[in-house]
Structures are given as C-alpha cells and as structure tokens.
Image (cartoon, rainbow, N blue to C red; front, side, top):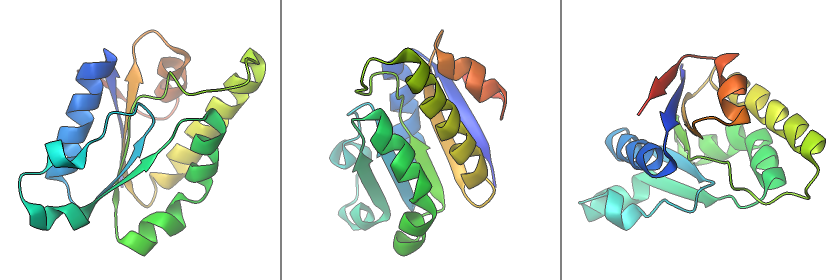
Length: 141
C-alpha cells in the first residue's frame, strides 16, 4: 500500500484531499481541519455509505485514533485513509510533548501505510514537513 503527502496552503490541500477521497471509495477521512462535508463531496446519494468521517480536534485524539485505525477501517471496509491538515489541533501548550506526539503519530501513519493507502495533508513550513520527509515523498498542491 502507499503513503503520500500533499503540501501547500491548508484550503488547497484539504480540497485536494477531499476530492481524492470522493474518487477512491470507500474512504475514511480523519478530519483534523474541520473541513470534510460529504454532502459537498459526493454527487450521488448511493455513495454516502462509502465515505466515513471521524472528526479530530485534539492532538491526543489524533494519536489515539491512529492507534485504533486498523480495526476501525476493517469494520467499515475502508482501505483508503485521508488525513486532513492537522496543524491547528488543540494541545496543552507543551511544545516538546506536542513534538513527541506528532512524531509518534507519523510513526503510526507509516505503519498503517503497510496495509492501507494513506494520503495526508500538511501545511507548508511546519514541523510536519520534516517529519513527513522521513517516511515518503511530498507532493506540492
């Protein structure tokens, strides 16, 4: 399976990610940017049961969801996982702890890519650019 990363301005990246999700069904979207709206993504009602959205608002919820994502995706039959930009997740203002959680999240994403097609969005000029480069090529959007 694959791990790919789209990089650029948040809105452009998230739009490209959602377009990809709607073209590669069934898809599971981890919506860290509060951007996913399946009603805008899909033109046919019969496709609504092929796209799943999990809203993520905390840095810790992202990590914990990634830990359980294999069983979640298996239960809904999704092999395509989309992760919207996660630069604005809530945290407890501890920069070192945030860095460690993001590093662990990227390790989990990399491991998941062995069994799933994963597409992640990152905002340019963030810590995620350095972390993503350790695991895959980055495509500018």
